[in-house]
Length: 118
Image (cartoon, rainbow, N blue to C red; front, side):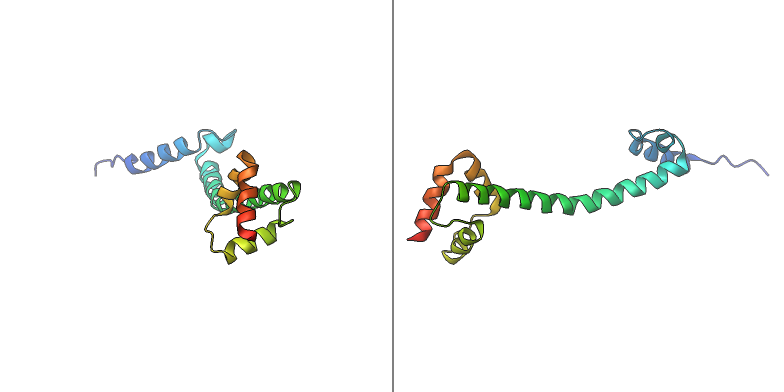
């Protein structure tokens, strides 16, 4: 029987893996088996940290809003009271927008809180 030339599919798979793992250190970028394991671990970390990133940004926005409300001694002295009254008045401003307003224009946030209190 004639010899079967193998390896096109496998080579294509390995080169794709090498491109993914090219920035890894040491054997994690050179050896196929370890780079496969490292790729799986990297994808697990990426999946986990996407949720963690959302959580961290939400915490950051809440901290910024709370800091500005307490600093300026607004009508509501805390973040929770401000958010409660926003929901009560049905003002649809999410925490990201409120945090941007709090950083860039503190007076605008004061005006919003004064409007809510009336």
